[in-house]
Image (cartoon, rainbow, N blue to C red; front, side, top):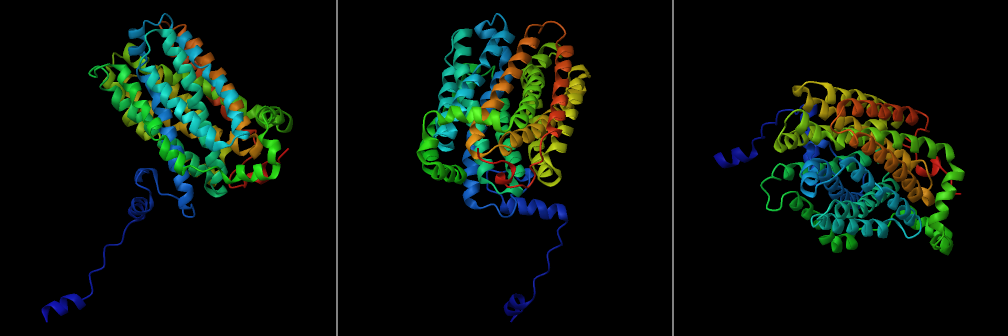
Length: 448
């Protein structure tokens, strides 16, 4: 009797969840395991097939950011071990990999996104591993030059694949989340760098981790499919779009059909790259030489402040989908300039908060630039548009490294602060572009 009564008695109603608790619960329930709940939930209406593509692209870009983070965090250790005569000039030469990517990216308009992405992923993995065996500055820079070409090709084609596959109302979210997940690779690099003085081969052990993507190639080949928009383009154009010269023609067609868009996107990429590389590449060097930090303190700042900052990717993606990309991108770049000046001129206690704001705002602005450099051009020219973007960003990065690297022992804080103003100027060029928020790609441009 007692048992029946207990079973039939209505269970007490659970306490009503607050809106914040409800959002967190949905994030835990709806998100794949590899998306942390603090980055928010996956928007409704995104098919599981799209999330599978998203996961594979995010994994490739995760290791891309891991490789990038090593060169910044371990710069002092690498320079001391290999006896770099001039760090800035050597790093500027390493950036020539961006010009190699300029020649590789248009191939995606000929052979397809999938095959170029997979080839670039293998190239970046093997190159990262080979870097660990460098014995001279020339060997290190030569290997890194080829590796960078693969890294940039992999990340750029990954963005194109996401843009072409995701629904218009959620493209900003997809790009933002992709950037956030990729930046976790920076966190992995920072976490491992904290033990660089205790690893058996020092900084070389950090680069050996880069072999992982190559080991995952069989899984990528089985599961990654070509984008639907590119398959449709191939069906419409037939053999003409598969000819050898089609990849080169896409560059010329881009310049003829959308010169103003290409100019504004290029200027935004150039100026943002000039200011961003100056601030980030020498942050570890600055805190160790000017503030006397040990490696573990820089790693702690990168993990904590940088961890907060990567949310800027998702925030910019969601706000861009809602309020427009131009306003969000311009505002983020202006705030980045102010935070950079405060980082290099403020007291020691302000380093971590300023660094968090730097990562947050540059991540937000870069989401907008990536979106514009892809959304504003037709399917047959998106590989070419990424090649154009990589070339101007390479010029900006090389210029920044050259300018700052030639005076590391001088007024480092002053030079970096002046160069960071270029990022604010990049935001002005974003305001001159057409708004792409929640618009189908076919309404933004026409095939030539």
